[in-house]
Image (cartoon, rainbow, N blue to C red; front, side, top):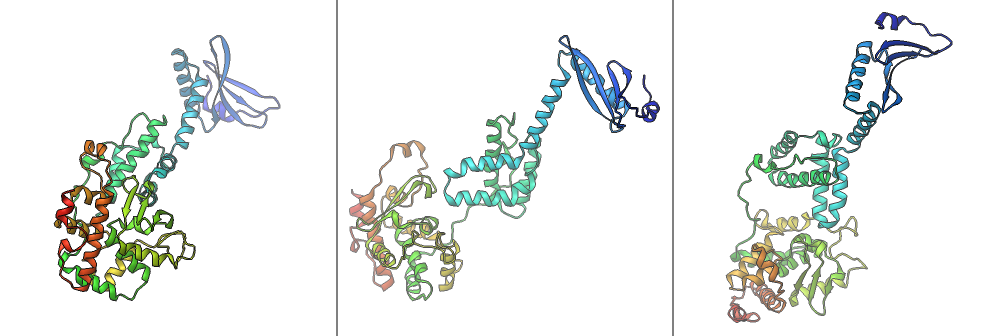
Amino acid sequence: MLTDTAVRQVKATPKPQYLFDGGGLYLQVAPSGGKWWRLKYRFQGKARLLSLGVYPDISIREARERRAAARKLLAQGLDPSDERKSDKRESKARRDNTFVAMAEAWYLRKSGTWAPSTAAKARFYLDRDLLPALGERPIVEIRRTELVDVLAKIESRDALDVAKKCRGWLSGVFRYALAAGVLEANPATDLDIVAMPAPRRRQLPHLPLSELPGFLQALDSYRGEATTTHAIRLLLLTAVRPGELRAARWEEFDLDAALWSIPAERMKMRRPHTVPLPAQAVAILREMYETRVRRELLFPSRDDTRQPMSENTVNLAIHRIGYKGRQTGHGFRHLVSTALNERGYNRDWIEKQLAHGDDNEIRAVYNKAEYLDQRRDMMQAWANELDALKEGRNVVAGNFGRSATTLRSQ
């Protein structure tokens, strides 16, 4: 058997030298002075040769341990060379299948099915919270405790809604890796069990109906951008979501038919939505159309007309006319819903106008009615009422379009 001294002191010669240690292990000494551990063995009757490393990086003791490991594989009927290739492939797969690689593949596959706002939000929090913490880790090495720690950091800044969304996105990434054959189990399950309980959801600020006349008069006196005023009025006249209005394109409107058709990809519930336009909304849109200057968006950004205006624009205008913290763009949906319900309109019409999903899934499958005629009358009556409120006239439901009683009977 070789000794460490003998291996260390052996000198290079013009021809390669082979110093044997037994059991097929030997040290090959090249004329250049390099020293490599080799293992000769037979597998299925054929002579094979396995490299065990370079001396002195691999000592005699380590070379013998590797020989023993190779002999153990042979005893199990396995070829050490094939096992090494398999280990290398697995090692490469671990290096290639990082969390960031799986997350980007998942995002590319899923984001095309989301509304643009959802895709942008997922992209933002992937880049902000998830990729910095997990990005370069082989995904097979990530454990549930690490995911809990990442989410706890998000919760520590009171971003509980963000943490909830991140739980869903993490589950999606790991499910994608599972389906791709990279993982055997999903560590992102049951993360909600250790999540901080969310506080009761608060409604977005919106005015009581008694204060609506003052708001409308203040809006009428506002000297800001006309397009912002138009946006606020259209939110009140249609009850659409602010994001649906900001990204609206002229091609979606038929002003002669007084209809706005929002495609499914722009809707929160991923279903197309038809919005009847009261005469007041059509008048605003016709005025805007005359000054659109070949723009595809109704409300383009001032910095880049290919992009919609900022989501903060409407809320900033509301603040400036004196209603900061009391009304928001999205809060108009609550305001309109409250008003229409108080006036006795059919709940199905109101929910369809708001493009809400039905809590009863079976009922939602069978209830495909658009209630377009009923909603057209309902929203025209509401638009007329807004005019009356702004002018300080007394409001009587029956004076505007058809009365709520008549509508309920249909």
